[in-house]
Length: 599
Image (tube, helix red, strand yellow):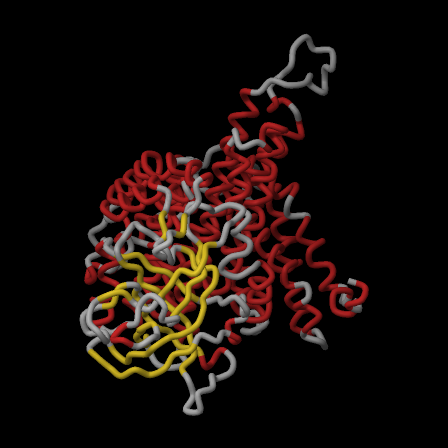
């Protein structure tokens, strides 16, 4: 696959995670490893032949807002996504009852990694739509599923998630988009929505005739005011094209793309300011207000939307890992081909040597490989947890997987995003001055990847979520179970000569994270540990990735290169864990107590 080594992907999927073992579960009965390989082959073909050729052109020719309010994408992006939908890849993990293939999420995630590596922006269209339709099928009524999920399954519509607003950002309790009751019909309780939504990826597109928006808004109180906080948020289905039962019948909804955001990278997908209910272009039934239907019950919006948000967060991590892989492979090839400088051991050598002969270049290649391999392993491991949380045969097994998935979601989102960007930085560095030019792909990879630590919740937000809700929130139960498994892997590593050197660092990092969690739970001021939540997030991510790299190195028949990757990470990266956790353990309050005048 472009940017993702297929042999590595197959090893992770089949030799390490044992994807074929999932076929023993009733949900995946009758499926085979050959089915999974065939699906990966199709995704690889589309990534190479459709998505990759559109990657650079769509970076230079961004989406365009036309005078009639429509958005025109680069033709290569439009055609690539259209081909993806026509091939039915969006049906990979959809239930058979809804026309899908019902493949494991693990397999769908592996397939998507290559598409993301080829064209991360274009991959956003199907990624968001698949998550959107999954929410509808999980929480919508049968009629809502037929009207709004089925078209996405059939490839005649795409979907978005509309959360943020210009003045609210990530503080969703402060959103002001309002919903006013407008009767009821076959699609459910109907409302008229007014407001503005910001940073909406894919809201404007010319791939499909319809776009299904999942919109967070607040239902008006009797006095016309809005409820405060997140408990007053509800979720609405707001299509671009209204169905027959809407006021005025089928036709355009009261939606308008008010502007496009011009981004540093990730340019192939539109990113929009979406106005609802302005009444300037369309008035369904002669009345202004975007028509939408309530999903679930009033006040359940954020809780329901977390399913899509968490799926998107895992996919953000996957995209970052895929871009790290592609950057690593490009810089590795360059380091073997480019001859520059004399070796340190012989400064009078008659001719330059390949860059790969220089120790610092080798360090950067190993570091990139460890980040790319570890990040992809983390995403696939998390995807397997999602499969088990939904399909394991016993309630106990499902609950265990769900607890681990809940704990690791912020790590899976943020660790590849932060360190995948670090890997892309090193890919540019290996290329030297050439890497800073648009003639070499690593420059664009860095720009594309820079979004990932921001969207779907910044790294700081993920850190607070991990420490306050996932670690301190359950008294450390989920973390304790994870640490027990990590220590068991360290013990296995210690028992083999080839991997024994991995055990002390892994054990030490586990002890450090456990100690930090204990200090956080015992802090007199709960704000003090939260001021260091990002450090805890980085440390936990490094621990988990170190564990997964060691676990893969323990697989019988694992390639020698995999062991060297794990050794490098344990030698050079795990020592960083103690430094990230030191401020929390030592009670540092500098970030809290520094006066604003000194900032």
